[in-house]
Amino acid sequence: MSAVVSTSTSHSNFVPIFNAALETYKRKTKKDLATHPLLLSLQSCDSPEAILTVLREQIPPFGQSQNGDDGFTKWVAPTVNVLYAFSATLGGGVGLVFPPANAIFAGIGVLLLAAKDASASREKLVELFNRIERYFRRLEIYTGITPTTAMTDIIIEIMVEVITILAIATKEVKRGRLKKYIKKLMGNKDVEDSLDRLDKLTLEEMRMASAELLKITYSVEENVQDVRGNVQDVGNKVQGVDDRVQGISRV
Image (tube, rainbow, N blue to C red):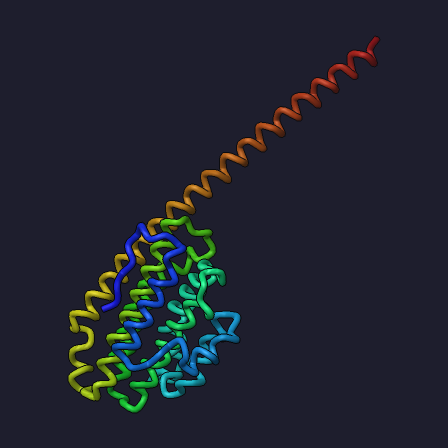
């Protein structure tokens, strides 16, 4: 289990925390996301849509749902959208050689690739990602808000937790006991604990973002009131000038 960063963690501590999560992932899955070919493919992506395209092309069996629609996009897109925005929030100056969310996207690809030959695993993987998707969908509306320091700390925790979930799920798939895996994945204590933490973290981020949005709205309203006051003041002064001009014309 990777260490979960506390809410008091500063932005400058992000690099060692995220690197530790990647090392834990490597130890559990025997895969190094920092050098994985999928990561190289994702490096040139400049939008969530481009990332989804890369993942869909790499993992065609998961591109279509059973009824023929683009099920992959439906249950992965909200996660990609929010993590992409989070990565942009952290910026390129955090000391990593790749955007942090790209490692998570590569981890999603590794998990899907590990399970692609087991059609029965698809249902449980969709169930897993549907739960993650529900947590991230609640944050989509807030991705345009500039985060506070506290919000950034939660963002870091969320990204580390997603790495943890992917590591546990990938390890279970790679054991080759897919029938047992399918039955127990969503009841796996480590997975459930991580999903519970992810639920709480995304709720906390949503509350912080809502409070920040309310503060911004209140500030804008105050500015509008100030502008209205200034306009009224100017109007009064103009009226005063008009009165004086009319007084002069009557002389």
